[in-house]
Image (cartoon, rainbow, N blue to C red; front, side, top):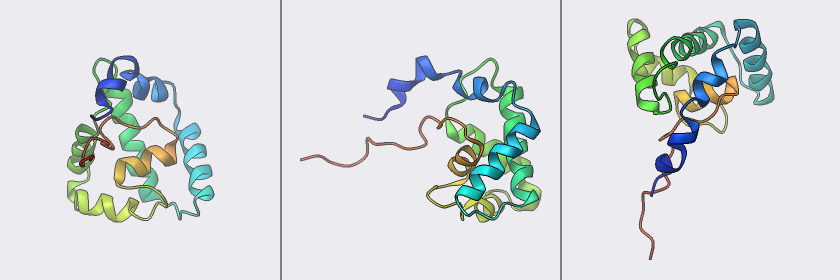
Length: 127
């Protein structure tokens, strides 16, 4: 059983609540602090992608469930298609220590709550 059923109702507003009043200055400070703690070499390219995702959350997550990761990855792929889409995004964020994937890396750097279906503990067989 995956954890989506357990987290959806009470956590649907977590993403929007985490970003609705977040300023770029506060975001940059958090991202820089977390990147330094992970010994991750943060660039303006990283910050640009992170800003784009946060603006997307602030604009589009007011009225609907925004915890499903696939929608946000699709948004970023389209927004950065001119630079190579997902290949560009994975190249940028693949080096974040202890994180898997673009969105998980961004959420860890920005101090945001995890997305639903980011991980699925339901796969596999138990004997």
